[in-house]
Length: 308
Image (cartoon, rainbow, N blue to C red; front, side, top):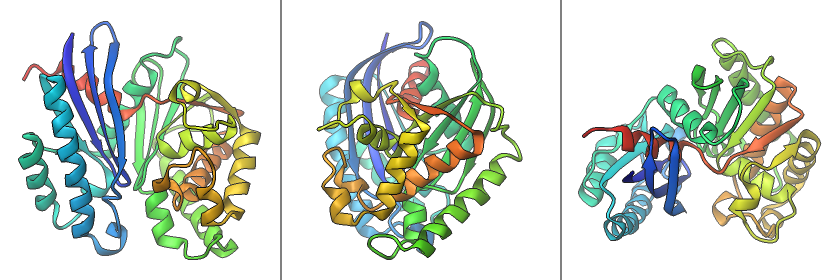
């Protein structure tokens, strides 16, 4: 067993997992898992740069995480940055800040590697070798991975709950024209995915990340967020469609009043739910299996395998 720390820095949130991992047995014993909404991707779609306040929010979370990593004595740390960090013009400021705080070089990974980590994290615990589509709906991008015991095809596209919200949504509740623009971007992205990933023949859909888990928590009628109840829950298509319709018609205040809604997701959950529903429509999925284990777990497994 190797004690590792994995950090996943996305467009909307930054997350930490410290765990004892045996990559050969496929086991992971969680010691600490936490998430902070930092909105690193604030205005990136429009400006192409990280906002100073977004960087400071992210660095503040990194300082908190560095203390946890030191306290738990992780032997290896791997910090992975995803969609928002790929193309910004001031990426060096982000990299140097993380390096100074955590003592590791943040890796700005490709969408394909992001997809592979997500697949590993989501499917290691699932039994059977049926073909699965793993979908990781992030803030800036969404990853699609098809495989049985490993990745057979993958594609990352630039649709995410933060990106689409910032691009199109101005009204409260969202106007029909704004929702139509979000849906159009999603459908165009799904067309791109189908150029390389066969979606329509896949029978099992596994959904990851905050948009999916939030929809699941609402569908389950939870009074408070409960990871154990959400993990591997099966949410029928009709419930996803019903919740998505309700969210699109709700105001910011009404969404904020939902008990399981994280404050950092209130303004972006509509776009996230629309992405999930569109994917289910495209492949004809009768349900989505929700996984609380995702790219973060995949990063932890990779850190344990690294001989460095």
